[in-house]
Image (cartoon, rainbow, N blue to C red; front, side, top):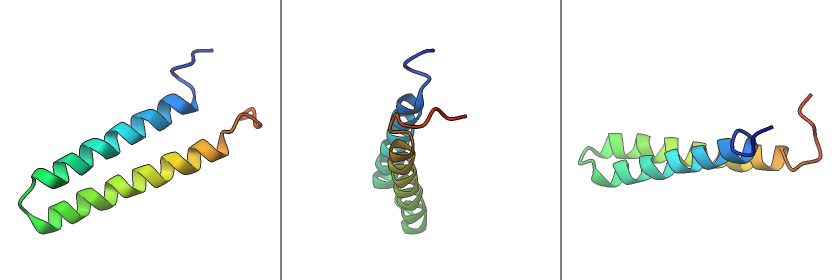
Length: 62
């Protein structure tokens, strides 16, 4: 079993993507696009937090 491919690796990837989306939102001049990017970033962060709580090491995922 690889440590990177575990839930924490996926959570880290989602947080990184959310950060990239937030940065893109700051760069865009279109207010509607900015809002969509920020909302998507917030959803990714919320999902990564939920997934992190769901995989706290007590469940074996089967």
